[in-house]
Structures are given as C-alpha cells and as structure tokens.
Amino acid sequence: MKKTRLTLAALLLLCCALLCACGGKQSETVSVPTPAPVVTAAPAPTPAMSDAEQRNLIERCRNIWYKQEPTYDDWFYTITDLDHNGRLEVITASQQGTGLFTYVDCWEIDPGFTGLVVCPDNTREGEAWPDIIVDKLTWYHDPATGRYTYLCEDLMRDGMARSYTGQDCFSLYNGSFVLRLLASKEESFDAQGNPSVRYHDADGREITMNDYTNAAFAAFEGQEQGTISLNWTWVDAEPGVNAPSIFDTPAPTAQNALPVTVTKNPTGETIAVGGHCWFIAHADNADTLVWQLIAPNGDVYSLGELMSMYRTLELEALEGDTLALRGAPVELDGWSVQARFDGPGGTALTTPAVLHVQDYTSAYGGVLANYYRAYTGGGTDAGYAYQNGISEFIGYSSHVGYAIEDLDGDGTAELVIEGMGTEDFSNGVLYDLYTLVNGKPVQIACSSARNRYYLRGDGRILNEGSSGAGHSVYLINSIQDGALVPSESVFTYFDGQPTDGYYYSSTGSTYQPGVYDEAIGEQEFNYYVGLFEDAVYIPQLTMIA
Image (cartoon, rainbow, N blue to C red; front, side, top):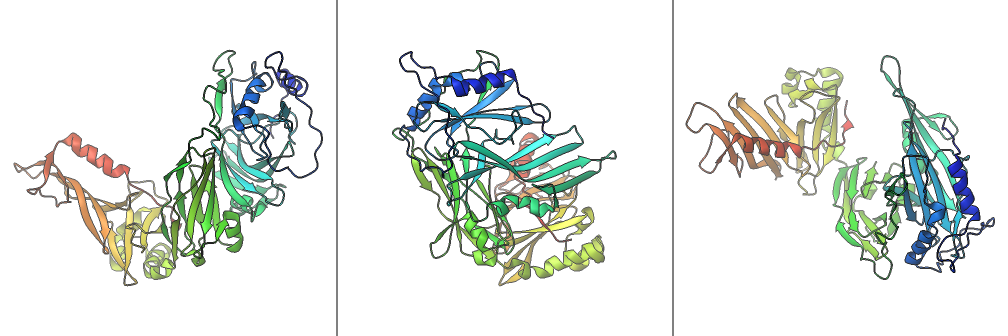
C-alpha cells in the first residue's frame, strides 16, 4: 500500500496556490483565481500569450510553485502543456524513500492568462504518484474528446524480497488530473530465493503476462500514439542552492526557434511472419515524436489504427526514439514506417523505412526441425550434431532459439540460431547461420568448440578460431552471395620461427603470416580483439525447444 503524508509545508504551498497573488513589480500584481467547475470538453487551444510570455508569467509566479523550504532532499520541475490547450503547466515532483514514492504538484496558467491555478488530482492528499520523473512519456490521444492520456510505470519496493510494478496512466483534462491503474505485476522471492511473478488487472483479478503486456493497447485501442519530452530540471533542496531563474536557459520561441532537423532516419527491416524488429529515429530541436505507418498506396495510419486492423500486431513507442514492432502479419509486407517530429521550430518527417515480411519459417523449416528434434528427443550431444549437420554447441545450453534478420541488406533474411539459458563461455555464440539461395537454405557458418562464430551489430560475423596453443585468429567476415568473405583479422603465430608474433591482416588471413600482414605488438593485438568483441550482438530469440 502506498504511504500518505501531508506536511505543513505542503499545506502552506497549497494555500499559497489558491489564495496568494503572483509577485512581480508592485504595480503588476498578477491574480490567481480559483477555477470554476467545467463540465464541457476541453476547448481548442487559443493562446492569448506566446510560449515565451507564458514562461515569463510562470517565472513571476515563482513564489507559488518554487519549493523554497522543501521537506525532502531534492526535487525537479518541468514546464509543459500536457492537455494541449495552449496554456502551459509547471509541474514539481520528488521521489523519496527506499520504496521509491513519487509526489507531484502542478499549476496551470489560468484561462485569462493572469496567474496560476492548482491542478487537483483524484489521489488522496499526500498519496504517491506513478514515476513521472522520466525523460519521455508515451501518450494516447482520443480525437472524440481531445483528451491526452500518458502512460507511466510505478515501481515500488517492499524490502529486498518484494516489488510491485503498476502500469498507470494519467490525463490532465478540464484543469484536473485523473490517474488510474491499468494492470500490475508483483514479484517476490521465497525464503529459498525462488522467484514468483503474478499479474493482476485494475480490479485485482489475476491475469496472464500477455494481458499485462497488452493492457495499454486494450485500454486505448484505435487511438493515436506518440511521445513527449518532459525536460526535467533538478533542484537541490538546500535553501539558496541551485535556484536559478527558469530563463537562465531560455526556451526557444516560435520566432527564434531552431528548425526541427532529422539526424537519424529509421532503416528498412526484413523479418519473418510473426517476427519482431525495431525502428529508431532522432531529430534535433524536437519536443514530440509520433510514429506513423504508410500503406503501399500512400495512405497514412496511426499505430492504434493499424493494430485495430491486424490483431496479431503490436506496436509500441519506446524510450530512445524507438518503435517496437512485434507479431508482424504478412499483410504488412511493403508497408513503410515513418517518424514525425514536432517542435517550436516546425515539423520534420523522416525518410520512410520499408518493411519486408516473408514466410521464412517455412523456408527454414528443415533446419529448425533438426534443432527441435535434438532438444526434444534426439539428444544434445556431438554425435547427433555431426549426423544432422548442426552445431555441437547444442550440448551447452538448455534451450535454443532463432532470429530471422537480413544481415547483408540484400532483401533476403538469414536464419540465426543461438543457445538460450546458458551462462558459460557459449553465451552469445552463433550456433548456426543460414541464408537462402534460390529459395533453399544454405549453411554459412556452424560453430564448433575451437571454431566459434558471433553475430555483430553491423551485420558482419566474428570468427574466433584456434589450431593450437600458439595459433589463434579473430576474423571479421561479411556475407556476400551466400558465403562468408573475410575482411580483416588479427592472429597469433608462435611456432618457434623467426616470424613468431602478433599480426594484423587488412584482408583476412590464415594462421601463418603472409607478405601483406603487419606485425603488431601484444597490446595492439589485445586492442583489436576487444574492438572486435565489443561489437558482438545477441538478437532477441524465439525459442525452438
């Protein structure tokens, strides 16, 4: 249960917000009227002040919202427009205690643009909020009412053995906050350290993990989805410390704002039916990001609209300007994903990223079946592996999974197989790698104990091999025309010869130094090995068995 607390300082702040005028010059007293009850839908934004003028008003009302004598160590504030009505809000928040309890106060510029009014919420006085002190929040927009609802997690701890995560949402509508719980997850450990996870809906009924994961989609099906940057400013609670004017770093205005500029376009993806992938985009001088999908005929759809069309599809705007796509149906083949960034300086669209969805699981079905049989009855030993043309690394993991990714960007996705549930040296090893040639699976790489392969984030393959104590190689390969082509390597050669030592090859090499290979020192050799290994990438795997 969340703890509640109502301090004398909080009471004084609330009284100030409702009764005191904002301080400016003596001849410029700014009133703070009490808002009258409103029952109509939120009005369309018709600001009588520019963004800069509203920030100036908030600065002049600092005596209301700025916590000069807080009762906790530090706090944060941000200035935003959550309800998109053209009137800015100033929000203050702090997170306290080992239980991670968040407390929030908010004031909005009144409709007459003369002062600030308190934005009440439906929590009890002093009750904790969800974790709102984050860089970005995902929102859903209901076009029928104009309401914007924001998703927030609420992580609370009860000692080391129990934690609670709530999927919460809140909206600022007609001047008041409404907070509600969508679903919750409870994690605990018994006396022996065994974990237990239970999921519940908003009414406390137990639900599945899938229901918990899709709680927001179910609640806001069909609504437009996007993200907002909150840009929190941290304030030390010690009086007189870190208390700058909000204009020390002026916010851009529409007149002098820098243009929104895309700095990273999402890249196209090739995946299997039912597969998953991510799209990432970045832009400078942007406050909000909205993802949209474009049909082959040019029609544009929101995330909610597309999920209502295809029931297996999941689309989620994540932090880091990332869109997660899961459960892709074959009907999305040829669609494009695009990000729209908005800021004071305008709007910018990314280049559309084309999505290719193919039935690769059928094409690679024979390979997947071999691994399935190995783990469900064939025996995960080297003998079975050799007889069936699969990796002997099946003996090192309790599960095996696959991913289908277009590693070389040629429009044909490769089959990646790696172990799951392994914590030893085989973690991250690429057990098997296949591509399609004329529609048939062709093996590109297969790891063995002394010849291991690893997938890199750039689509290339790291090969780590040894033919003896003094002979080892770290080789980078590219995939070309269904085969691995070496591009560079470092290797050791210690065979009691004058040429013994460490070498770098700009084209890839065998274990024996050649005329074009460059002798290097041990420190440089270790540098290259670290450089090669740091790029190793473990994809999200779908379990085979």
